Image 1: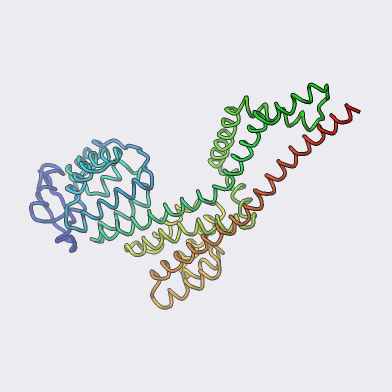
Image 2: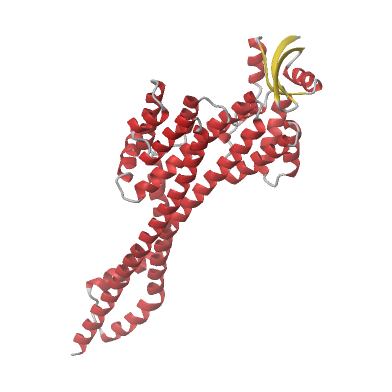
Length: 407
């Protein structure tokens, strides 16, 4: 029999502390639940028991899409806000979710929580990679503050925001993909239909093909016969590009180069700041200390140049500077956002200002996307026009050569 200390929720709102004697974590949790409380943390001063307990579970790495994370978090939040305990919520997800991954995750978490762990401890023990540090940290904060359902509601909004950003990035990638497909289709069309018919006449006349026509024929022939090699090559290129980002020096160089390209640099900056501010907003509302929230939000920033600036901001904030002054000194944000932060700090409404800045950034992203779309349209026309001009010149030279052969 060991002594277990616990933190629990009374009526899903009031945090209480207490102690129970039990054989193991499972029995301790059952006793706490029988008292009418929802355990959020159970621990024993007996280190040996705690270590043996932690060894029972194997860390698993299951990839969840944003939609699957949204579905899981929404279900948990809905049940908790209705007063349904976390175990019952997980049982319902296990029985009713259409996602097999979520069924497996719910099954594993039920086993862990029944053994005495809390929801956040279950995530940390089995699925830390699946949900990530940000998700885990916010869930822990929600449990400690007694506002888990509210924190999960904020998490759902954050995941929806990330999903929206992902959709905007895909939208920005549509035009280049259309351009590549149109050029590829044009080459296939000429290779299969146009060039063979045209060359039949020229071969009959014994005309020697000009260099541009030979180049066009070679390109079309290669596209038709080795289309699979082109697909592999494109995949290999993007694979190499992605792997190059694992090298710190190459990634830093590419990040700096991207930030020098007009419009594209604005898009990258606003996307990174959007993730940063969104997490900072959620963590601040959840009661995470400001410095800890800044450290947590910094993990969402992918561009190394922007991340270095934010790291400098955190350093300045730790030295006692205001948040607005810290961002101003590091040049991590546009001046307009710094002015808004300063106003929020002076008026005591910093949380509201985080939310307002997040809304402004979303509008900025939409504006930049529209600008990129307007730039891509003429670019596509110019590139396609160049391809068509090359084909037209090749046919024109061949036709002139054919006429000269006749005379």
